[in-house]
Image (tube, rainbow, N blue to C red; front, side, top):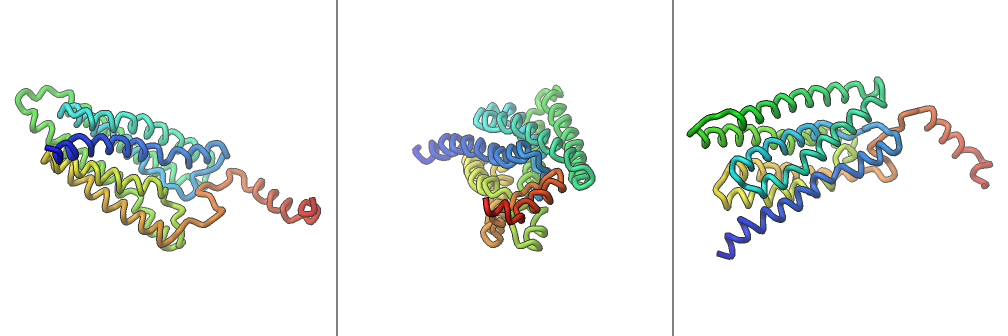
Length: 250
């Protein structure tokens, strides 16, 4: 009895809390970039629209299951992920040609995410009569595909991390939250015998462990930021001022 309480109530309740921390993880980095009028730099913007699609899918899946742990955990993430995506767009637009590649990548991901959200809405809205289990299966498989892409998206930066010997491209708090979040929801999925919940979250936890390992092997460069200045001339001027002997004397 006590074990079922732990796995079916305590684990998802903690998972909801950890999911909130996961969704808040990029907030500080993006806020600093926006306030400092800086660019994305090494930050990978792809996870943000994927996170929005992931949360939208799981809200729909939780609604079909009448599982409000899943619904509550993902509504906040949906709102925050849309906010992050808009911020990433703004930061890309500040960079001109230097961020054109990331802007196009973000645009393509948003288009794909929007189509996926439309499909999720269609699956939920269509009157399928007695085929409710088929609806849950289709929606669950869609959610699985999106969440695996979300968990795996930072792995696109593995080559950059290894080549630069720095984990600047990875947001460590988000990687750590992926491990904890994936583990808790995997436990909940196994407790419900719902492998559409358990399998992708277990895989996500493994991806998170890999990312945290990279952060440990290749620590971030001290004193450097993920973002880079918008105006290079300002950076050069600051360097000249700091090199002036008079300014050092004062």
